[in-house]
Image (cartoon, rainbow, N blue to C red; front, top):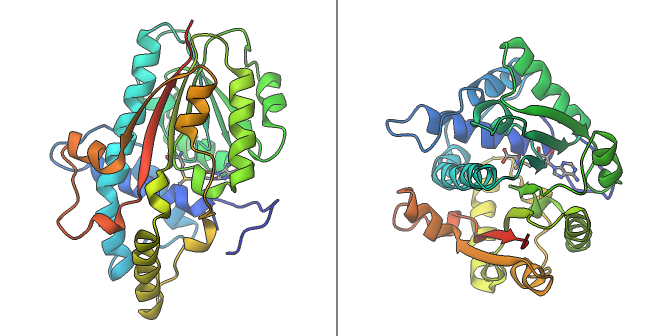
Amino acid sequence: MTRTDDDSWDITESVGATALGVALARARENDCDCPLFTDRYAQCFVDAAVERGWRPPTSGPMAERLRVIGGYAAARTKWFDEQFIAAGANGIEQAVILAAGLDARAWRLPWVHGTIVFEIDQPKVLEFKAETLAAHGARPAADYRAVPVDLRQDWPKALRDTGFDTSAPTVWSAEGLMPYLPPAGQDLLFERIAKLSAPGSRVAVEAFSPRFFEPEYLEARAQQWRRMRESGEQTPEKLWYVEERTDLEQWLTERGWEVTVIEALDLMRRYGRSPAAGAEATIPRSVFIEGRLPS
Ligand code: SAM
């Protein structure tokens, strides 16, 4: 599971399987008493992956970890939903979902009529998604354009070739992506986003909080992974680039974006999904950054 500069994956392997973890969390949220959102496709993705041999953890420390992280994934999903809805209400009719994975927003959000939604992810991930949705007769709620390309390659060209309009304001999202890019990859991604963003564009990002890199937090995480490995679990931490990187809040601000930031635990509290006492170290120390470029 070690990463390389040009690795690729199918949905049940390596970084691809992380999208299934998110789908599982969304399926559970969808089925709870008072869900933060409705995602009736999440369970379809999980079921289709199980048919291909994927086995979600059902007991043991990894299953418990997924349960705790579920509240984080739910709050995060809700926050990104709100970013797209707000952008549409403010006249933005072009959306780009970076590392879309099994995000079903193009099928489940009430998009403003005429909105174009581009999704970028690795080819096999988008292929699995399209096949699963087609098997369930799902129809996109926007003008949907798949852009199957690796985000370390020339994705701006692939995006333009699919009809992206560089003169129209865009809402961008990067949810569950930053840990899978090394610091230089993150820098390049944002240079490209900035270049493609017409006045009035918005960006919504889940990023490492600078507090993620505090030694005692890193040690607490390492201990959690160690304990899981000792109890025979396969752990995914090698998929992440846990390396300090550009502070996106500052980077965007310096380039004229109006930025607001909320820490993960504050977001979870806002949506009534605070972790149980003692479980905070399991929650990623992320920040949710909203950037708006003046019109
Ligand atoms: N954003 C989605 C969501 O929240 O449901 C998926 C999140 S999942 C944790 C990570 C996703 O990032 C996977 O779908 C993976 O394929 C995608 N990804 C990671 N690195 C990528 C890259 N270099 N190019 C394209 N996609 C990438």
